[in-house]
Length: 258
Ligand code: G1P
Image (cartoon, rainbow, N blue to C red; front, side, top):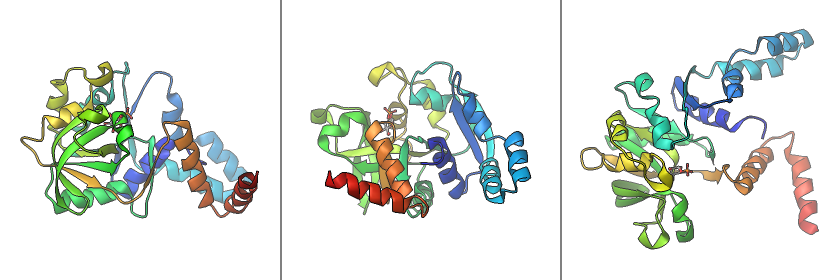
């Protein structure tokens, strides 16, 4: 609504206690680096105008974490993007957030997942959600064994299956906690669905050796990668904003009567 999608992702990581933010970027996307950097000119201007509120908003963006950038020089898939971060991540578990999956929740989803990671002594945790059968081919789909309400031991998974071949209707949503074992797995992964190096294909090779948990998170998810989802996410957040909500409510009521 009033901030780029990627900032939602960074805010979620920050709220979950993550400090180091690695952003995988690409050619021409300089605006991302600038967005999270100190905005000297803008800050000086706001200071001069005495706009303390806006100044605090701008400064808070930079203070959310320590930012590192890695470029993905070719769009070879999500797995390929994650592999680019190997040297920066090192031998630690880490989280992956796909910012175009916007999730509106009371507790940040990544925080919920870290709790699950600790409670179940997991090596990796994947955010999952039930989706209509006709939509399974848009996602990574897990085959899981239920071990508690909303918690599954992941036995296998498949990227973008045809509905008839899907092992379940439990789809992976863009939040992952991964063990560093994912890096050698990614190095060994050949292009899969869509000719891309799929993160799903690499994770599935870990399930025999590591504990991979699928967790049905609490929250409403919007796919901001498509136009309708993007609009719905904007409206949801605008309706929570005390300044925008009355006008937007009136507008929506008027449109409904048409
Ligand atoms: C990616 C992943 C897929 C996952 C989805 C969640 O797909 O490859 O497994 O279900 O994100 O949004 P993409 O949306 O990049 O096609």
